[in-house]
Each structure stands twice: as structure tokens, then as C-alpha cells.
Image (cartoon, rainbow, N blue to C red; front, side, top):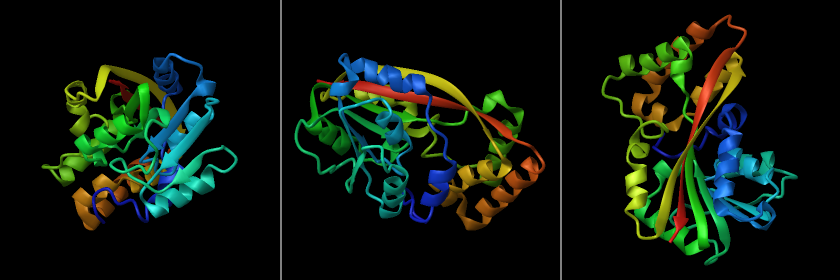
Length: 255
């Protein structure tokens, strides 16, 4: 398995990955300052369409999902039927979309895989004047549940030098406000945060972990399997695992 290649993970991703705090979607759309029914949006690195479908429920004029991975895109097409979402192959660096065709560009749990400078150039190109680019993630807020703290700590025990790439509470997100503020393509960088809780069965909780590419790559097959066994043992017999998710979003207006 390679970093950022979700081939083979799409089924678990589509079934078990959580959504995003709805109030953050409301705030991002509010940043545009005009009626949602007139908004054309592109969700780039859309994966299986979890965030894309949230946008599609907001009554936008149009929503297009751009995803490079065929496995993920196929799942997204299947799970987005009757939503009006249009799917196409493309990447953050080359969306294939026309100049100035959208008011909103988003990347949900995927901007860390993009080439930052090339993606900013591309989003500036496809956004209309005054349009918004928003990058968001939905990491677990483990502090709300001691069991989740224990499970997360097991990762470091297995690999003390691990440095998560895809976590929305580390890596790129540690410096994203400064990075976006330094880009001449964008202005008015805004940070947004919201929480929502879910209840998952042990099988669903384990399925969400199986969809994490970054962890599998860094741990390797043997250590990752040991981690899954630890999670299965610690959650066995529980009626549900309550997980609080922290939606973190950075919105920047096209300069």
C-alpha cells in the first residue's frame, strides 16, 4: 500500500467513515454571502462522497465531485445516486474544470495529499471572484472518551516515531492558517470548528480504522494487524462506542 492510494479501502471508507458537523457546512456556505441556490460547488479529492453529499443536501445550484482514485470514485457514484452530484476524474492539481466555473471549492480529509502550491493555483483558476476555498477534516476528539485515548496511545506504543500525515489535528493543519495567509491567491482566511457525536458498534468502529491509509502505510501489515486485534479486544462486548468528532475547517476567499 502507498501513501494516498485508497485502492482496496473504498468499501470500508464508504460504510464506516463518519460525516462532518453540519454547523460547519452552514458556516462555510455563509461565507459566500449569497443564496445557496445560486452556488456552484466542486468537492475535490471527494473520495466516496461523504462531504459531497452533505453539500448536495444544501440545495446548491450544482455540485461536482472530483476524485482521482477509480475505486473511491466508483463507490462515490454508487452512493450518490439521485443526489444530483456529477462525478469526474481529476486531482487537486488538475481538476479538469473550466476557468471561473465555481463559487466554492472544498477538500474534505484530502488536502494533505495535494501539492499545496499547485492546488492553490488550480483552485484560484476555477474559482469565481470572491469565491471560497475550504479545507476540512473530521478527526476523533479522543479526549471525550478515555477508551479512545487508550486506543490512540496503542499506535504510539507500536511505533514510537510515528507522525501522522492524515490526522486533522497534526501535520498540515498545524500550520495551515499561516500557509494560506501567505498565498497571494487567497485572502480573509477563517478557521472554523464544530463537534458532533456518533455511536458505532464495535464492527463499525473497527471498519473505520480499516479505512485509514496513512496508519496502514506507516505501521505496515504486521503492526497494523496487531493494532486491529487490540482494538477488537478492547471493544469486544460493548453495545456501542461513542465517538466525538471534531470538524476543523479553513476557509479562504479568492483574492
